[in-house]
Image 1 (cartoon, helix red, strand yellow):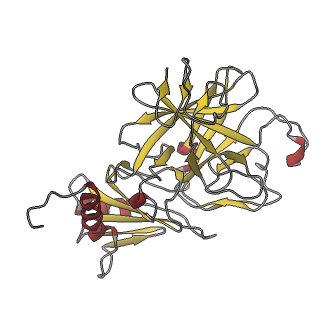
Image 2 (cartoon, one colour):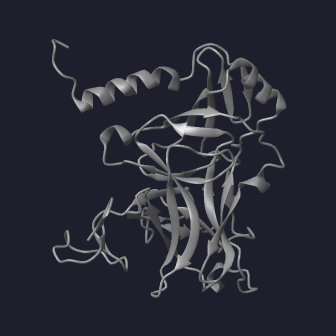
Length: 317
């Protein structure tokens, strides 16, 4: 390096190269394979597939669990392989405890659901400092302003405590969200280890919300939006589902009480907040850029007057 000091960009690039060594699957046969993934003893890495395929699913039985437990001592590397680049935020649920390897990713834990006086629906999620818990659906927020964070398709974690994934697992993946306005747990964040498609006759149509990765028609990226017929999510993602009372009619149009989009407030460890929005289908989300007042109204520029305004990363007083 001719004695020159490494720049931040150089350090980030070198870090990416090092992690890629085990992010890519080894050339030899896997130590054990199973629906949706494989484990390689040579680099102590478990690979799981979160892909857009009708038959995609994750299944981990006792034989698979024993293979990994026997061949690793406590922690192991985990790579989640996606069909699309992690250019936006997302949801995630995994069958083990995990911590992101990359500083590009932060995890947030939804804990409440409410509406304000103007009728805006909002999910609140607190920062989960670096750790995800097995079978617990979380929001995965990506620093998309950094170039090195925009093209990730293999998401790397340190993991431990692998759990079974079988026909009984789905019941463990439902997260109730308390709504203080209704006094009930009438919303839930539901993870899935199977590919799900909501066809036109699906009983949950009109009550299910996913997170949009990009703008499409009237749907804005970053919103939770009501899922329409044909919507789908790949394995290891999550979606919002309304559990309260709705009209008896089955058509989506008849459920007029439910909103088309839902905001997300990300609460940092120091109590500051930033905004995101959640939309349909993909289990993906994006942060909202710019400054907002406490009613969520976007301002043209950084506020100059005294008062409280929600920014990208903090609250200006």
